[in-house]
Amino acid sequence: MLKSFYKKASDIRYDRLLYTIVAVFCVLGLRLFYLQVVEGAHYRELADGNRIRTQILQATRGIMYDRNGDILVSSRPVYIVSYTPQPGGMPAEMQARLATLLAMTPEEIQKKIAEHGNFFGAVQLKADIGQDTVARLEEYRDVFPGIAIEVQPLRYYPYGDLAAHVVGYVGEAGPGETKEDGEPFLPGIPVGRAGLEGYYDSVLQGTPGGRRVEVDATGRTVKTVEAEPTVQGHNIRLTLDIPLQRATEEAILDKVNELMLNNVWPTGVAAVAMDPNTGAILAMASWPDFNPNSFALGISEQEWRSLNENPLRPFDNRTLTGTYPPGSLFKAITGTAALEAKVITPQEIIYDTGKHWLIDKRNAGGEAYGPINFETAMAKSANVYFYELGNRLGIDRIEETARAFGLGQKTGIDLYGEVEGLVAGEAYKRQVFDDDWYLGETFDAAIGQSFHLATPLQMAEVFSEIANGGTRYRPYLVSRIDNRDGSPYRIHTPEVTGRLTVSKQVLDTVRHGLLAVTRPGGTAGHLFAGYPLAVAGKTATSETGVGRDHAWFAAYAPFDKPQIVVVVIVEHAGYGIESAAPIAKQMLDAYFRIGATTQKG
Image (cartoon, rainbow, N blue to C red; front, side, top):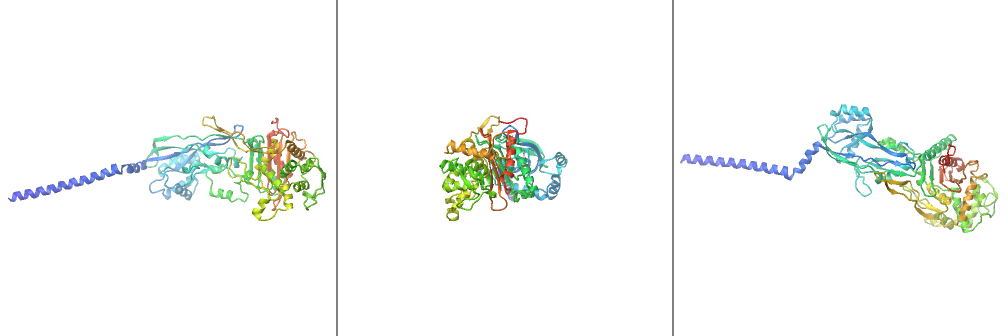
């Protein structure tokens, strides 16, 4: 009986032990099932995260060629130092040593890592490091876990600041920055910020690639797990002519230096050259400017501040963002309106005593030209004559003709930032100032003052219309976009945006008046004395109300078969013939190779 009792107790303990063991294995099995099946993907991702790294490969941006096929903007391969964030972050000691090697500060490194946030992939710390730095980083790789050296394309502007406002610049995409379609940019990818780089960014950008690599404990790549190749951006061919562009910018700098030596301090210069028969921009320059290579490398805060806070606004492309009273350039518009409205004939004589007989408004410098007709008045830029044309026309017809030429609206050039300008008129004054219009303001408007404001590009359009017989073309900078195999992807065809309803006889009269400007007795006659081509032009000095007047000059050549229109403005530099016309003449010299062994056209 006792033996039976002990046996029964032993069986109970055995059963309990067995149940306990089974329960433990069940719990372990369930936990294993949960970890491997339910949460398996998550933990595999964590495990891979310790050994698999995703690297973004930058696509090579498209090349920009000038009209002659010469490279204006390209990319070059450079060494890039990147950092893949490690558990626990980058130790302070490592930051200090790395900063010394890369000629950076620890704070700059911290900022780049912080801006990267939690995004996958590596943080680009510095581009275009030298061979010596590469060798030292490789030598001390074990003490720099997560640091990698890669070869990636860097945007390169071989001519430095040449045509900087046209080509623009690139900068790294920032956190949360998106494309036009709302899709976010990959951090670190270069994005067009201004000029053609910005306007055609989606074309030039290309498609980034990537690869997943296996790394060891120090971050060294062991092998590539998978890779997706990059796709290079489209190449684009510009209308710019590099020799003409260079000659334009050199002429600007020469004139600015000359003026400063004579204690004249211009605050800005803009020059544009355009084909009047198509709208193609042959040269476009704005001073002061900047070097876009600084942005490709990652501009320092100090350099950025020096540019951004510069009162001369070096980022402004004055050819399409600067608005100025057109001054006597506008007399070509007033003259067109008066001849077309038949309020005057080309042969009618107006006696110029130096001031108008209705209102005491005078010629520049107190000149009195006596009996003059249309051609002489244009050649001499006689204010009194054009005051009288304004008196006969009235402000409404002046405004209507100015708008017919395209003033008061954007030209539509393929660049961001263009402004509309302003055409003076009664409606504008009433709306803005709630005041009546006066005859004296019509006089001012007739000679390009009053409320008129125009960009140099708009005035290039005006003189192109006069030169080509009345057709307004949309200005453009890109003539062709190539497929990646070199075949045409898109070819630009000249686009007509307006036509003047003015007779050929009227335009011929205006053209001969402009030709007289560069002939003996004209305001630019001495500058073009003996010139091998017939040039039509117009000097202008527009009042600013503050400081010196602005200096203008516009011209086209050859007179009988125009190939090029040039417009130049020098801010606060006085007379157009002294400050702006010499720049324009050097542009014509360069285009037609005057002074060289051969002549163009």
